[in-house]
Amino acid sequence: MKEQQQLYSFYRQLAILLKAGFTLVRALNILSESGSRRRRSPALRKVIEHIEGGSTFWGALEREPAYFPALEVQLVRAGEEGGQLPTVLERLAATGMRQIRLKHQIATVAAYPCVVLAAVLAVIVIVSTIVLPNFLQFYHQYHIALPLAARVIMHISHLILHHELALLLGVAVLIIAVRLLAADPHVRYAWDALKLRYTFFGPLTKEYIVVATCSTLAMLLESGINLIRALELVRDGAANRIVRRVLDDIHEEVTAGHSIAGPLRRKRIFPVLVVDMIISGMEAGRLPENLIHATEIYRERLDTKLQLLQQMTEPALVLLVGAIVMVVVFSVFFTYIRLIMAMAGGP
Image (cartoon, rainbow, N blue to C red; front, side, top):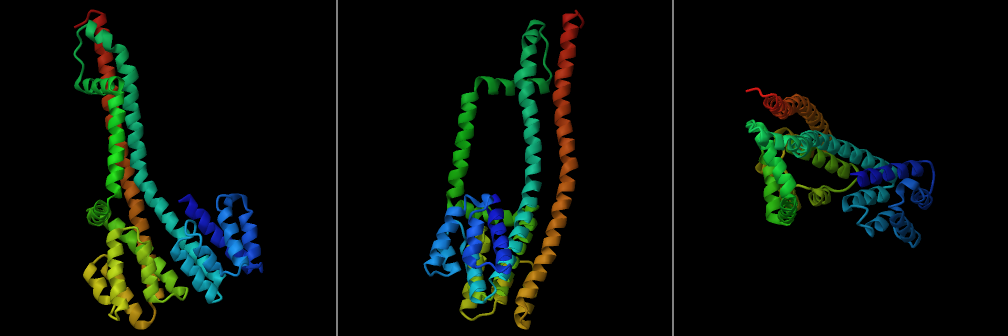
């Protein structure tokens, strides 16, 4: 994500320099010498060399696919050929940064529960490996029966202290298995389908897809790229394989001269509102505008749902963490009290 931020920052700063009257080569030289772009500087220097050798800007970017995605290269091409390169670069930077902020918001909501649960797990590990084992010999000496929670924690302690190699091996095997499964196309296709159908996160995933697809398609069309080529670029850039297949079907239908309405309605990936806005936009010659409106509607809806999800998650996690901590604390506390009573000769 940081690399993407730097790339969009590069586009924005390049647009500013071009609007300020700098030549393209001079602007690229300035940006290649920037300290924040040192990792990208070799690629920029190659781009400059290609331009000085007679290449167009988009052609030079196309020769560095590791740094400049095909979709962005085609946008630059449209801007360069249409004499609107600074405008297109600004549009590309603004759209890209909005998508990055949305991704960051989604990642934050998803990561928060994981961080909290990891902290709880760390507390349990500390208690099970440091606190309770120190009292274990006294428990045996005074024949004290441990509470269920304490026994569970002691089993965790035994597993961590005496089977750490097997535990690490199991984690390593699990990681390798997940990576192998993730590399399988059938498994990834099934996972992408599951993300769209899952009861709770399915609607969130679909709304994010609507925002990403509509905003990118609108940007391409506004830059002068025709619908068929725009659909092809959006399809190639789609992360979800189900969406990619749908966009491929739409692309084939439009290429064959058929209406876009049929595949949009049949596939049911995009909400009815978005489908109607696309169809009406096609009929009225206002497709980019309608796509922008659809993007704004679903970005607001997605933002609202993410905020609501975060507000619901926080108290639920507080209750869960509180319950776990209470169980751990009371298991240690009551065991300690029983130990003191036994040492004092109590019942």
